[in-house]
Amino acid sequence: MNEKEKSMEQNIEYSKNLAKNIKEIRKKHFKTQELFAQHIGMNYNKYARFEKTGQIALKGFLEILQGLGKLEDFFALFNEKNLFVETKPALVEKKEQAAAPVKSDNDEIKRVVTLFDHERKKLQSNYVRREYKNFDGEYLLRVHLQESKRTPQMFFDAIRWLFSNNPKAAFHRQYIMNIGKLIEHFNALEHQAMYSEEAVAFNDEARAWYNVYKKQGLPEAQIMQMLKDGGYIE
Image (cartoon, rainbow, N blue to C red; front, side):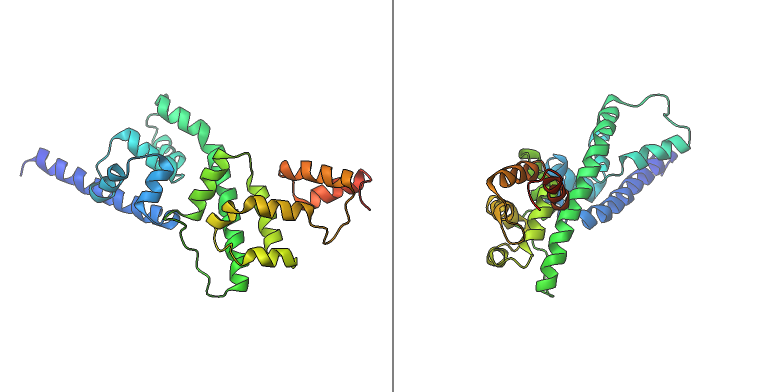
């Protein structure tokens, strides 16, 4: 085997090891290859081939790193070595601009799903999060928020009400067993949470403002304080 053949063989081995490491990271956040491929908008077969062989175009590799939140770490490595620090491809610049808000949104989504899991485990010690129609809860919520005007805070409030002592909340808990069902029945939950008079007797004007603030995604405590400051409730 000549030097060129040895070099090619080493490169293939490096690629496979890199794909193996990325697979381990992916499995911590996305249970299946299909879910992750959907997350980054990549063809499933293309991504599955990468995990198996390590072979993929640079553009696809950068998309994978972006989806795992590792793109900045990747370029930080080059910066440390003083490589490619003067210019970056347009694709990278575009993805870097989008990286911060996406990462922040993902953190909020993870908090929503974690809160739901935590509250469900209080009632069912053996509760284990299950996929809904073959989709992970975080993925479903991410897509839903992109398609709607809702915010993670709205789901925080809905979950807190869902697992409160309100008798109506107990009724809803009977059939909301995962994030998919939570999204499906969010309208009913939002209505109950907004118009529940369990703790405070709202007049018509206070209820109208409560509805406005709730739609804006403000935290419950902040809404109540604003209504008190405005003289709408005591």
